[in-house]
Image (cartoon, rainbow, N blue to C red; front, top):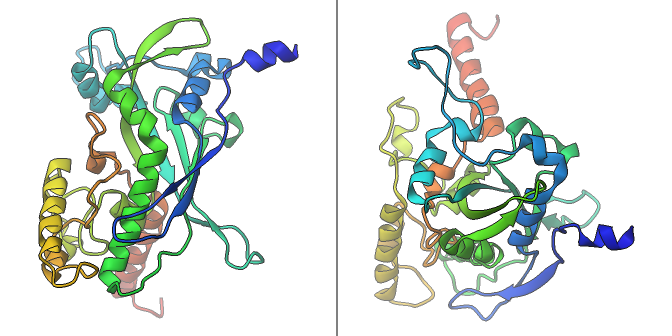
Length: 323
């Protein structure tokens, strides 16, 4: 029995590596396990067999197919668009990544952890959202060590922290990026082997992390469109941002930083750009990845807390504080 159990796909062993950023001698430790091992384990888990999808679908509410229904990820346009870019017979694996820096306890000297979780859009949403089903797999811990400021300006320090984040994420997600280009054979619990391509589909995070992940300036730019701070409350829809536009802004920031008077201080003109100075975002060479499209709404902070704040102000203006 133990031998049979040992043959079951596992989630891989934990490893660690050191990452650093240009211009600093500091190294930071990253703990991770191979996300491909975790993907294989999810794919082969028999408890998900009845809740897996391997191809996109279109569903309609009427016989004439005029009213389209959107339920699971497979019913959306994203999966259809990705499928059209893959080889014939290939299977798309929508990768869902989430991160959230967490304070461990009030009694641990303000110790924090920065976990990275992964799941896949092939598993039905009502299943993968249940903690008891263990469809969300812990694949790594990002560094929480302090970046020494030294002679860095506050802006340069923020950029250094952003570069550290992306360097660590790149180290953790490297196998998935490679598999997105070359494909990987995955065996499901029914014994079928499919030619699969892991595609970055969703990145779930709160607004500060949305800005960090998409290399967007926090508080002054939208991580999904070209709206600036002054446009946030206008009700106008901005133009969707494209990863290449962000990469072009990063390249411009790189050129401006090279002509700075001091190497450890960023050129003031960099601040006017919409992107953070992160020379190599983790999503840069992930085939077909659109980080701006992948950003999902932060339901708690942006909708529940954000809208309630506005609703309260509107109610006060209508009925008065006494009511």
